[in-house]
Image (tube, rainbow, N blue to C red; front, side, top):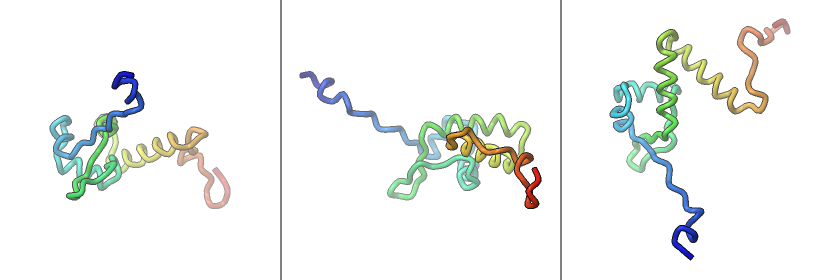
Length: 109
């Protein structure tokens, strides 16, 4: 049996990025990445023992999405949009009704 056959189930560990690495590969400053994390626009996936935030590869498409939305939206609007998209992606039915379609306190839409 070859080494490849014996270790066929061995997976490559996911790459984790520190803020400095994200800064080198994006147009954002360290402070902007930090602010976007605090605001909930992007999320760290884990922390180092020394307290550094670590991000996975998904942070790059998220930042690209933020760049596109930033052309016409405020950061508050972007946060709402991203939260709605995340919620829709997690829901089995594909999402919740838009804000305008939600019933009011008196039961009307």
